[in-house]
Image: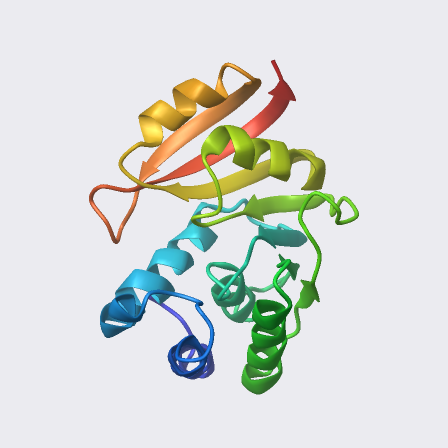
Length: 197
């Protein structure tokens, strides 16, 4: 990753906090932390390269342990025109973790401690969600939070093609399937022009 030294320091500090808090609350699997830089940091960071340049608002739904939302918020600090990042998490303990991380690494992002369905529409240029729900459900959750012309960035596993087919029963959308740089069985879906079928 081509990031500043300060950004790399923040990312490493975040990974340490993620490991420490995971011992108390279930944020990520403990086994995944052994390869945390690739499994969590690099896996999340690749989404930033797929986002449109000049985005102003990024919303991460079901942020949980902050993946990819916290990573995006940290890396956005290096962008010439950093947009704002909103993390939506319904679990109060996880939301407390997100606030603590942002405070400790010195990054400004907003944490919304509400259910995704109940949150005020965020009108974000980019909406992301990692390991949140199957695509048909995910699109239902994401649609109210996308600005007109907005883009969804959703990492998906080996069942991605089945999820796309099932989503097309309920939704109309443009979709680019980009191979993951960190997992050969995974892909990132770039979804735009989202409309009810």
